[in-house]
Length: 281
Image (tube, rainbow, N blue to C red):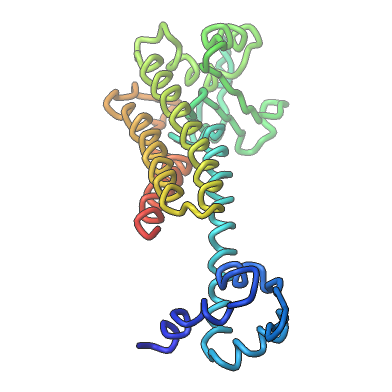
């Protein structure tokens, strides 16, 4: 039998007379002794154990690092689930072009135009190259929301009244309910379903942390499995938009094309990581 396995096999007997077991000592670094006749205090027990089991110190060091990495990874996953719910980087596109600037004007500008589609709506950016052109600062970042309780068509009408630049209005119009593109309903439903499944995944992530902190690792692993499943469901829900082809987006002499963004791929990686974590658990 290898040394480390033999040490772990014999370790519980070394804690006889102590009010804890070796797992608790590995996490907390000490034990409260029931010191009595023939008993040992925690410091005496520590010295005896280290001398009797040479591989114990290294094992405890590695186990503490394992718990630290596990906690940090879990916190990162929880923060990532919340962050992608509000991210606009699920589907993105960017192009540099020479395009018309305002309606009823022949003036043209060179600019970077960006389109970001999130679960809650669309974000359109327009940045001049250079920023100062036509005696104006060309730097726009406009958001149009379609979540429940928001009026996308009303927001687009307000943008028309404000006289926003043509590229911003052009892209925002493609996602209106009355647009010939017909993608508003598909993107809106996909965003709603993906957002709902992510919040369910977040609830199961909280539950898994509670169960893993208790002597119930099996149920904690099941909660992690369900967390990963719902995260993947959100990815599949948003990926359903790929069945609907987006209208051709022409800005001046250039065409803007979209692709899956960072939030999509991070969410997919998180779901797969949960599956692997549960397999190891």
